[in-house]
Each structure stands twice: as C-alpha cells, then as structure tokens.
Length: 307
Ligand code: UTP
Picture 1 (cartoon, rainbow, N blue to C red):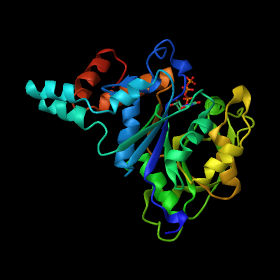
Picture 2: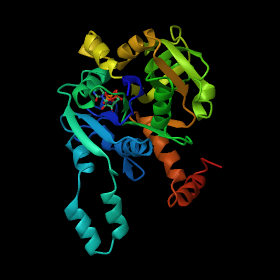
Picture 3: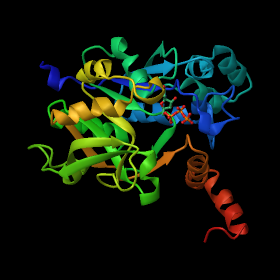
C-alpha cells in the first residue's frame, strides 16, 4: 500500500487551550466539558469520529483537563448502581459514550497554539493521514458527518489535506482563518460524493485578516484531515505572537504544494467556545431534541421569540 492511500484511522482532538473567552466558567472546568443540552461539547466531536469511521482518538490535553479523561473512561460503579435500580437505559448511555474507540492521551505542557497542540500528537499518529477536530466546534445538520466527508476527499485526491469552510459575514472575517481558493473538478471516480460539485483547491490561507485583506469570505470551521508531512511543516514553523505555532502556517505549506482541498460545509457550524455561539447551539440543538424539542419550542413561543 502506498502512503497516499492509507486509511484515515486516527483523530487528534486538541483540548489543551485555556478557554479564556468563557471565564469564569472555565477556571476549573475544561471548556470542552461545558454542556450543550445533555452532552459535553467534546462528546459531539467524539460521536462525529465514531460516525466517520475513526478507530483511535488522541486527546492533546493540559492541566485542569482530567474531567475529559474521566468522561471517556469506564465507570463500573456508576453502571452497576444504575443497573441495580433498573435504570438500564441510563446504564447503557454511560457504557456507550466512547463506542468502540481506542483513546490515547498526550500533554501539551503550555498552550502554545493549535499547530503546537497538533504537533504534540505526532508520535501517537505516526506516518499516516489523520483527522483533527476542534472540540468546541459542533458540526451539525449535514447529511454526512463532517469528518467523513473530509476523509473521502483525502482518499479521492490521493492523500491530499482537506478542510471544511463556511461563508463568514464581513464583520467576522478577522476571527477566522480565511482561504484563497478556486473551484476544481472532482477526481475521476468521485462524482457520486456529495462534495464533488463543490470541491476547491486552496492556494493560500490568511489567519484572522482584516476585512480589506481577506482573500475571500470562506473561513475554516474546525475540521481537518491531514497528511503526516504536516508534522514536518509544523516542526519547522517559527513561533509567532505569544510564542504560538499556528496550524494555518502548516496548512499554507500544504497549499503551496498544491495538496490542500476545501469544501463548503452543508450543515450548521456552532463555535460553542464563544458565548453567543454556545447559546445558539443550545437553542438550535435543544429545538431538535426528540424529547425536549416540543416543550422547548412551546416555551420559546410563549416568550414571543419564534413563530
Ligand atoms: P480555541 O482558540 O478556540 O481555544 O482553540 P482556547 O484557546 O482554549 O480558547 P480562548 O480563545 O482562550 O477562549 C480551539 C481548540 O484548540 C485547543 C482548545 O482547547 C480548543 O479545543 N487548543 C488551543 C489547544 O489544545 N492548545 C492550544 O495551545 C490552543
């Protein structure tokens, strides 16, 4: 098997950030453990991994993040407590949180940027393509799981990197990595994939540009599938402001090689690491909840906020 056709089995979930936008909630609790409806944010990303065929999740953690390890660990006492009281459904929920995934943990000793966090996982990933999911971003409502689409693009393009982008309003361009890209024809054999009509080749990326300097209105959402050579590029990247190594710098090198593709995500992206994004995620996901949706909608109607 050539390196380019290797299966995407592993996903890196960097969770070592300080969550400063969410203080004081995140002083002692990891941002990724904040709950949207009935699940911590990070569980949405792990469920996306399961739905995308990932076998091994690698968390890049830091200090004050042990709640994440506990959440995905077995909880035999809790399970037997629930079973003994006939709460079989709750016991199953607890047991099945991590599916059949293998979990590994590595540490980022200081929050030196997303690129640095990904680089911390290099040894655990090894010489194979891998996914990266930002644990505070929920990608919902698309017919196919976001990461699965990117895995399809990576494989159809012979091992190229793949990212999801979304249209960003003018006044928010400065908060995103913005791509300079052009539409291309999908590779032969990929015509039946949902993304085949909306495949882009990325020429360059600019991290948090002013609206005047932004090369487009397409911003990176928080899902990536990357070839292992990104680790060499990140290792060679010089730290920028605050000593941080940005993932965007590594992505720019991939784009320079003509090996970075993008597609516009068809579902809804929630940046739940931001207070407004978190509230929007809670309302939208709450409204879709099979049990809570109806009474919650009625409650919102009573406030005269929705039709
Ligand atoms: P964010 O920039 O959204 O997270 O990074 P942050 O730095 O924790 O948040 P603020 O801006 O201070 O509020 C996206 C993801 O990358 C992780 C974060 O934990 C988050 O899940 N990350 C970020 C790291 O693991 N290490 C870092 O050095 C930076």
